[in-house]
Each structure stands twice: as structure tokens, then as C-alpha cells.
Length: 379
View 1 (cartoon, helix red, strand yellow):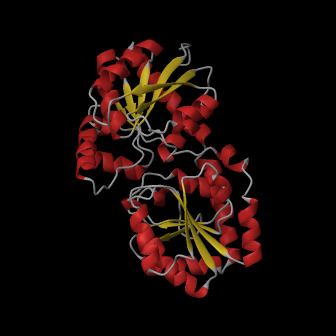
View 2: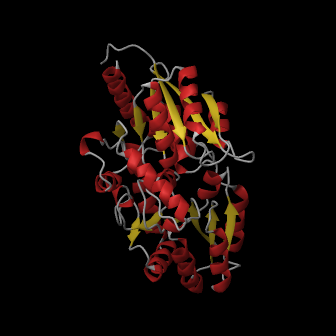
View 3: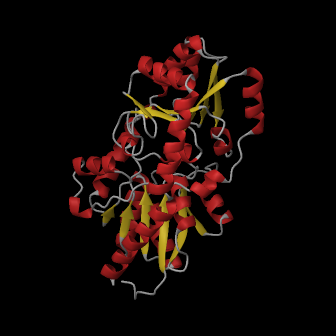
């Protein structure tokens, strides 16, 4: 395998054009790949005139080749043939998909062009949208047919098996974070100054405002936390639950204690100001945002669920709390912000753990081996 000198051309096919966890994962992977051996091209679908193209724009800024697949809407079957055409145009060797939409389109386009397809599931969604649930179920059917399925955690591997994906197709490559990106960002000076001036603790969340993140429990926990701690909750991100969450904040009389910051390009600068990062999810893969918090030396409190437990060891690299337990979550948040020695121990342990075990560089090397294997077997 070492003697195989051909540079491998890999299409990274993102489902979303915004810079959510999976999209940042793609950027970390391509940044740390050996460009003498692998050439990455980043594709996404533009299915509306006002669709964001953040992923391809950022990849282009980083010096990578990109392309857009134009579609007339979210369910345009012509997208499959346009994807196949771009695969031929760029002489792609392997297509690497991320999410149910790119799994479906990527699999069919790969079959039209005779190349292998690899999928990385970053997490399986819970949705209240019936049409979206049908699309996701269809994506799971196609996932069974993909050549290699590469979950980012052991917890996701078990979910893949439960969905009927063959064990022989599954290879876990654990999630990695771009530690250099985190370390080169300075904390937001305005927030730091305000914290000192008002002697306030900042509780933070970064991610999508969607059902599986369990954010109503975090808001309810803040109702208890603010009874004994001068604290604010900063929510960074957008999603379909924003309006419902804003309503919950008003009902809990927390308008002066919770800020919705929306999607922020400077999320890392703000995250570095957090006294605690909280992820109260019901379902996760191996969340990069937790690794980012660890790399930023921010103590983590998260749900005691598969995926999260693979990186957060209770009372060592963070604190775990049962999902859907706002009262326990409130107690753990309050206890940690009142105990700076414990918070310092957790943040230092977490930083060293993520550097040693979850670097993007390690992840990129493992993917290169997988790409080589598929290229050789396809020749």
C-alpha cells in the first residue's frame, strides 16, 4: 500500500452549506490531510437562491477546490445526475458523504460513475417534521448500501448496527478537533471586561437549536442557578426551536439572564469566555463542540449518554448529568461555578485528553488509510 503513489481525489459532500458541526469537521479533515497524497474537493447543494454557501466559501478561502450542485428545490432528482457530471468533470476517485441527503444523492451518483462511496454519520436526528423524518428514513436505507460507513464514535457504531448496517462495512474513526484553530483564537475582550465589571458567571452552549439538544432543560436549570449565582446563559446557534425556546425564557422570567446570540463566526472567541460549557442533549455522536470546549480549556457539563461518555469521563474530563434532569443539571452547574479549584482541574485534564486522543491530524491519517484501501480495491 505504501508503494501506491497516485494522489487520491476525494469529494467531500456536505449536506448543509452552513458551518454546523459536520461542516466544521469536513474543514478540519481537509486541513490536516497530507495534500501530497490526497486532494480534497468540497461540494454542497444550493437548492434555493438564498441558500447559504458558507462551507464552500470557507473551503475556498482555505485554498481547496470547491463546486456547487444547483437544484430546483430540496427534492430535485436531477441533482443526482448533476452530481455525477461533476464527479466526472473533477475525475473524482472516492465520494465521502456527510448526512442523509448527501448519502442518498452521493450513493446514486457514485453508482452512475463507478466509484466507491464512504459515509461518515455524525449523529442521527430526532425530528418533529414528518417529511424530514421520511427523508431521514430513506437515507438510512441507502446507508446500508454504501461501501464503508465510518461513525465518529462507538455509540454511533451501535446505532448503525441497530439500523441494520452490516458490521463488516463499519469502521469507527473517532471524531477529531482542529486544536490549532481553537488555540489561535483570543477570548472576546468585551465579554471578559463585562464579566469582571459585573462579577458574572457565563454559562454557554454552542450548537443547533433543535429538539435533540435538550435546551428547555438547560433554560429550566438556569431558573434555579440564578437564585444563588449571578449568571447569564449565552446560546450560540440557530435552529427550528428558537421561537419555542424564547417563549420558555419569557415563561420562566429569565429574559435578563438568557441571550440568544444566533449563528456566530466568532463562536470560539465567545466560548473562551464561558465559565462552563453545557450540552444537555438526548442524542449525540461524538460531539466536536465538546472537544472544542476542552481544547479552549472550558470545563464541560454534558448529558450522560452514549457518544458524550466516550470523551467526558465524570469528574475527570468533565461532569455528566442524566439527560432530562433540569434540577440535577442546575445543582451541578451551581456547584461547579462555585468551586474554581475543581473547574480548573477538570479543564486541565480535558485539554490534555483531547490533545492526546482527539486531534484532527490523527483523524486525517486514519481516513487516508481508508481511502487508499478503497482505491486499491476499486482498481
